[in-house]
Each structure stands twice: as structure tokens, then as C-alpha cells.
Length: 382
Figure 1 (cartoon, rainbow, N blue to C red):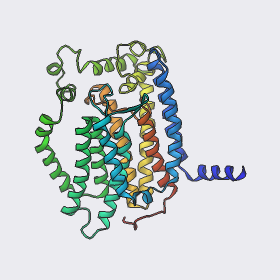
Figure 2: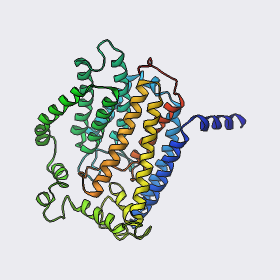
Figure 3: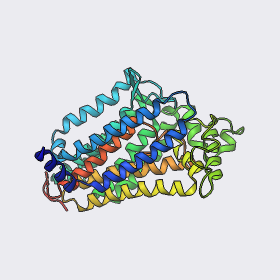
Figure 4: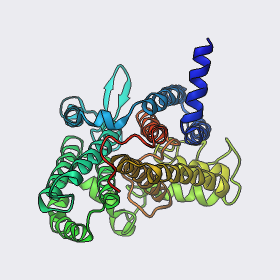
């Protein structure tokens, strides 16, 4: 018993308890919002799933913080195979999640989104690849090194698009890739050349890989009158979301009292548009609390990365921070009508077991990096 107490005390002392507390507070806040958003539904399944996911997520946070991620990354071939095979299962067993793409696996009524899990292992694998290339004779800015990095990302990006047509998840991978390369010290010329290549390939991607529905989703925020003149099609959700946010004003209509939240007019209010639920019932103050919590988590990730003495660990923290920044910006942007509705959840606040557990696990990795600030699997490269 004393041994167990001693181990727990040591873990609390060495782990990033501030980060864990921020994650738990965000999840509890999200639970209240999900309860309100699903209160009129005929089932309590959403609350049960989210609570279980949070409990498992906390467990994963602790487990991942105890694992030295740099030692795991030494077995990079297994990480690569896992990423490819897990995404490839969507070719066989992928089912639609209600957003027009086949991005889900469902077994016994339990849904798993492979891309949610793989984005974390992708960030770790990419960081490992950069660490190895930086130590190599040619360095990270040589033509062969950059080509290998682009090949790694391009393959995963196209695999997600082809297997599931999940543009939202593919964009998360793109942001992680760009952010980690920027943090790694890739020269600006490569980003400039990459922008030219992407611009040249855009017509091919637009005409051959995106469905008409996805094209309409992308164009809707910027050309609403052209894409959806009636306002009853692809712009409906964003329009209702803006109404919800506007009606909440400063303090909101009151918890469990939101007009739209407590009706069936707004689809996906417990997932993609949970921020609008907060805005309607808790007002701008409630929305600001969400933003402050997520900003605090992101800043903590960046702080841990900067303090780390390992090049690879810094890259992992950068990737996790980039993932959270993009998901936060894109989700809130969807709700206020400035970004396309592409089915990206708000970390910790939106309903989604895969998302919650994966985010807890990713931040557990960050906590583990803080617990081992002097552990350097590769030589110090700063």
C-alpha cells in the first residue's frame, strides 16, 4: 500500500499535472454542453459514450506519459505499417458517419475513426524521420531529404482521401506536416516551391478527388448566394450556427434554455457545432472560456517542446500543438461561417470517443516529454 502511494506521489510530482487538469476541465465542460445538446434526443448513449471515452482517455494520458516516445519511435517501421494498415481498413470496412465520407469503422455499435488515431502516430513518425535526416550527412534541407518527407506525407494524405474521402482529416495531416517542418528548420524556399506545386495540382485534386458535395461545402462560406441560393442546403448549418451565437449575446439564454439547442432544427449540434451550443446558452463568456482553455493547453504543449533538450521531442510537441490549433480554428471557423464545414470536432468539447481518447493520448505523450527533459534518444541537435 505504501509502495502504491509512493508511486502515485512520484507520478504527480514528475508528470505535467497542469496539462492533465486543463484536459479534464475542458472535458467536463464539454460534457455539460453535450448533455444540453442531446437532452432532447431519445437516448442517453451520447453521454455514456463520452464519459467512458474520457475515463479511458485519462488512463491513456497516464500510460502514454510513462512511455518514452523516442524509444517507441526507434521501431519506426512498425509505426509506419500501423498507419498504413489502419487507414487501409476503411477500403473494406469503412462506413459513412453522416458527413458524406466513409471515415468510420463500426463494430458492435462502437465507432472508431482511424484517422483520429493515426494523426498522432503520424506526428511521432514524422518527427523521428526529421531527427534521423538531421543527423544524416545530407541534412534536412537537401533535395533527397525533402523528397522523402514529401513522399511520406503525400502517401498518407492520398491514402486518407482515396480510402474515405475525408477532407477534414486529410487537412489535419497537412497542417501537422507543415508545422513540424517549419519547427524543424526547413528553409523557406522549400515552402515556396511546395506552394507552387500544390497550386499546380489543385485543379487535378478539385476535379478528380472531391465530390460535388465537398466542393459545395468548400465554396459555401465564400459564395453562399451562388452555391446555396435558398439557404436550405449546404449553408443551413452554418447559418443556424451564426443565429445561435448571435442570440446568446454576452451571457447566453441560460443553460438548458437555448432555443435552437433544445430543438431539432440544428443537426450535429453535439459534434461539429458544440461551440454554437455554448454561444447560445452561455453567451460570449462561455465561448471565451472554451478558447482560453484550449489556448492554455496549446501553449503548454509549446512550452514543453521548447524546454525539451531532444530535437525529436520538440517536433512531436510542435505536431500536437499544430493539430490542436488547426482543429480549434477550423471548428470555431465553421461555427461563425468563415471556414468550410468539413466535419472537424472541437478538441475535448465535441462529442466523439475516438477524438477524446486520441487527444488525451497525444497530450500524455507531451506530459511524458516533460517528465524526461534530459532523455535524449538522439544527440542534442540544437
